[in-house]
Image (cartoon, rainbow, N blue to C red; front, side, top):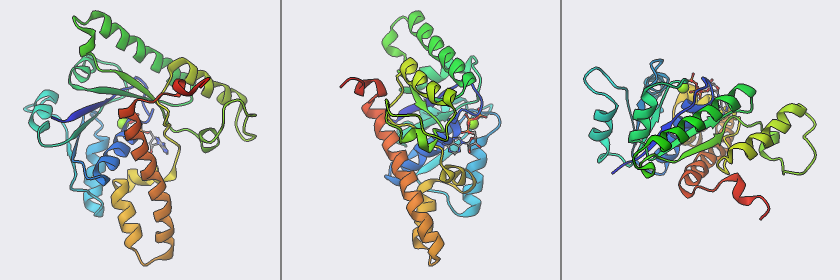
Length: 255
Ligand SMILES: Nc1ncnc2c1ncn2[C@@H]1O[C@H](COP(=O)(O)OP(=O)(O)OP(=O)(O)O)[C@@H](O)[C@H]1O
Ligand SMILES: [Mg+2]
C-alpha cells in the first residue's frame, strides 16, 4: 500500500512543485517506484515529465498522471496504490474544496513556506484550516498530520546558527522573520535551500537522471556539475528521511 504525500499551500509559487520534483527524485534514485498526481490545472508536473522524456532524463521509477473526466483523484490513488511505494500529489496554489479530498487520501500533508509576509499569512490560514478539519472530523486521528517545510531558503540562512550575528548580506527583516516563522510553525528540521540545481531540475528532469548523465560525461565541466547535483540529491533524500522521522526544528531548541 503506497504512502501518500499531499502538497498543499494557499500561496502560489511557494515551492510545491519544486518539492514534488525533489521528493520524486529522491524516491526514484533510491529505487522506490512513485506516482505523481498533478492536480494543478496549469500542469507543471505533467509538462516537466514531457520535457524529461524529450531530453532523455526521464526515470522509469516515476509515473506522472493527471485526473481526467473519467479518472478522478480517488480512482488514480486506488489504481496505483499497490503498484507504487509512494504517491505525491501536487496541487494548485489556493485553498479550495479539493483540499478536503486531498486530506482524505494523504498520509501526510506538506506545506512549503517561503520567507515572505504573504507566505507566512497563507501558511497560518492553512494550519487553521487543518485544525478546523480535525475539530470537525468524527475521528480526528483520520486527518493526516501537516508538516511545514521552509522553502527556498537562502544559503546564508541555511548555514546560520541561531544566536549568532545576522549574516552581512541579509536584510534585517528577512533575518528576523526566518526565526519568527520557525517559532510560529515549528517546521521540519530540513529546509529546502535555494539552489540553481533545483531550477535546472525544472528544465531537465529528476536529479538522479541528471547526476548520472553528468557523471558519465567525458566533459570536465559536466563532471564538476555532478558534485553539485550529488549534493542537491543528498539534500532531497535528507528531506524524505525527515518527513518520515518527523524531526522538527523545535525539537532541538534548548536541548
Ligand atoms: N528551492 C528552490 N531553489 C531554486 N528555485 C526554486 C526553489 N523553489 C522554488 N523555486 C523556483 O520558484 C518558482 C516557483 O516554485 P514552484 O513552481 O515550486 O512553486 P509552486 O508552489 O508549485 O507554485 P504554483 O502555486 O504556481 O504551482 C519556480 O520557478 C521554481 O523553479
Ligand atoms: Mg506548482
